[in-house]
Length: 360
Image (cartoon, rainbow, N blue to C red):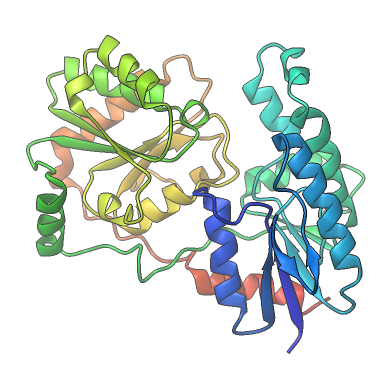
């Protein structure tokens, strides 16, 4: 059986990419002798570097160490999910770093205070230029790759949307939904909004609170459920200033986030930049409608029947979102239950990757 290495520097993180890496190992093991290469792993007498030092140095050490190891693995296939480590396929699941820089820094000089912004574009260029195939997980990222790497043939790029485990992320019947609401103490009298993700500044939790505040002033009984890791002290203060402190519940990182997707009315993710948010796809698959931004690749799955995508830079973003939610809240009995066809389940995703790997 041919060897396949999946490359991701962090293996124990709570981020979507780390979960994808482990899901890939499980899925591809049916077809190849598959192994995950991550920082700190010892394999064939070699320890992969990248566990010590500041974040920029860990990235550099890991990329150099992983490239050195892979160079000796003749005949092996490589599916890299890491900048600086080219492979048979480079999956650009973290987006294009230069685009993220523009989103994050209003002051162009500020970015140079973080060495990551100097080294990551160089590492990304290595992966894009030296990999046989480059896979974007949304058309948004494919377009950005074309813009920032115009010298690369378009034939090298393709789009494969993220998949998900259809046995976990699924719609439930009313009886099971009722039982889950009791378990989580979710009231049917509230309009229940969910935010799921870590990196709260980038993903726009402050905007979620602003939207909830606007809905409250319109007389809606809003409850905001916050899943993920972030600065609770900072965001509790924001909620307090907006007058919704008692309407916000911080849940921390959750292993069973699907139960919130299956029970809440809407998920809101006003992210500044996301190549493709897994949480949006997972929410939709559970029958939970979604509001996000057009700067999120997952917005390509949003239509008038399952949610709303608004440009993050819209000056009245929160007002538009609140209008949409208020309308849904008043008329939701007239909406059909969300029948989200599973176009993006794991089997479809894996088969598309297999077609590329089998060309190598």
